[in-house]
Length: 495
Image (cartoon, rainbow, N blue to C red; front, side, top):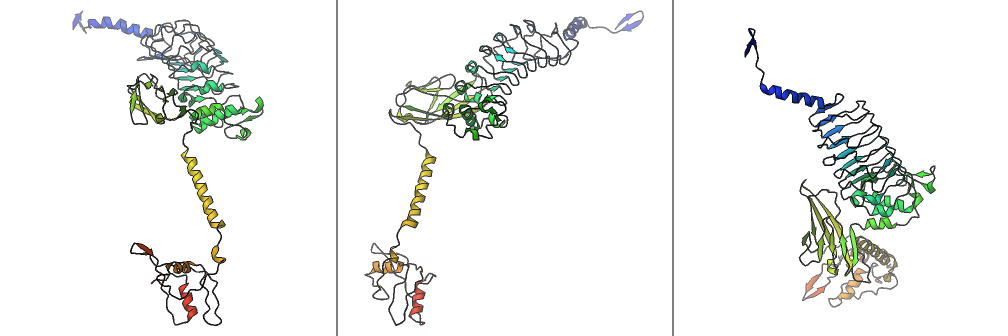
């Protein structure tokens, strides 16, 4: 404590004089219309017409949504080396200057430019963003995407371009984007689809390619592509069945929901695009050909490990097997340099993401045939159905087309009531006859026309031969007629 004029005053630490200016400087670097919290800077709905000049260099997330920004100068975010997420939605941006995101490329992963007034996607806008993973451009006025506009986005995973005015899209420009897994082009004005370019896209991207609410012209190829996606259970199709429409003959007034009402495509044959897509999980070739098996997976990243399980239960990983007949590429594809007949079978690709501890598998059915023979896989279901049909036809022929010989021939009367042991065959035939043998004993005897069933005695084995024991007749004192009825009774005779 220090005394000043008899008054005791508290001592102030020397460090306070050093820390206080730094605290004041940090408070001054946060714009007055914004809120700073740790590495988050929120300037949302602040009525900003220009970007603030002083921004905290520690900012990782910058929120500039719902403002009045009309332009961004080159290098506007160069003072933010840690910038990770940039939100510029609901502003009045109509264009971007080249090098707008210069010096912000090292950490920027998410960029939101939705709900602005952008009308063209220029090839110079995103050259400084090779690490960008998510780009939101929906609800703008974009009428064209230049072919090289996305060339610099090598790590792009999600691209959202819905609710614009696109009449075409350069699908060929995204075939070299290995990590792109979602492309939303819904609610645009696409007229025709380049089916060959779309079919060349990875299956993981096709499953998340959203094309509903467009002005497509109806056609068999287009219809077959979407039907194929529907059969494979792609959510981009099944989740928006009613929103998939096309125009008959290009007439706006003749719009039809082709996934729900496919009667207009009844005469369409299977298009080539669908045939190619249906064989993605199977591969056919001939002996001596070089076959390439793709490993389809939704996992993305640089820590993926690929392992192939061969039909012979052997394992192959990169770069290949010892004798050089198999080769595994960095993207997981397996190449059979010279196919053999014994290479046919089911190949299993196992993908492991070591960073996130996730696994996926993909099966490819390979059929290798001799040159000149059709390499068609054995269809078990069709063969089983054919066998069932043939069996049913044979049964019906046996029941209805076999002539009844017992009605056309008269069974001779037995010599005695009890057959002799040596006449076993005749005893068996008389017992199995559906009509009882005729009898002439006594005047006025009539032959019974009723058909009855009798049962044989159990078969006994004697001296290595099978012998049929004839049934024993029950003796009755009610007369011969009652005895015959008792023999040919519906009730089995128990000896």
